[in-house]
Structures are given as structure tokens and as C-alpha cells.
Image (cartoon, rainbow, N blue to C red; front, top):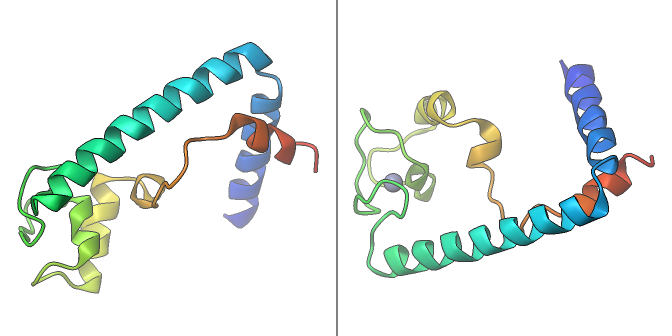
Length: 112
Ligand SMILES: [Zn+2]
């Protein structure tokens, strides 16, 4: 399994290294704008105690509606609920993304 993940990552890095620089720049710019807008929406909702993904209060926990805001551990959330999140969202979606995708950095990985 680990080898498959490594091989997949390497294949993806090789693919990215072949993307023309101007296309990478446009994609990076689009991702930056999208990330800035998502961050703005998140901050506004968060300051109001609301989830920017589902629109529910951050303290809300409903087993029937898994949401990323569960990672803030609302009352009722337990470890076994992670699996419900993983079924709804991939682990990569659940990972905190603090920066836009840097294709040049990823393309550099292919050099190794
Ligand atoms: Zn939510």
C-alpha cells in the first residue's frame, strides 16, 4: 500500500513537471484566488460561530450529517466518528490546507 502511494505521488510529481510553466502559473493564480475567497468565507462564518461548509453552528453534531467542522470536536464527537468523515470526504480533503498548491514545488519533487 505504501509503495502504491509513493508510486502514485511520484507519477503525479512527474506529471506536474511536464505541465507548461504558463499553465502552472495560471493554475497557481486560480488556486490562490480560490483559497483567499474560501478563507474569507471561513473567517466570516467562523467568527459568527457557523461552519462555512455546512452552514450549521460549529457546536452542532449530527451523526447523520458528517462535516469537517467535527474536527473542532463538538460535544458528542468521538474517535469512531472519523470513519464517517472519511467516507464522506477523502483524507486529503480533511487535511488542513494552509497554502495554495505550489506546482513548482511539486514539480521539483519529481527531480528526486
Ligand atoms: Zn460543518
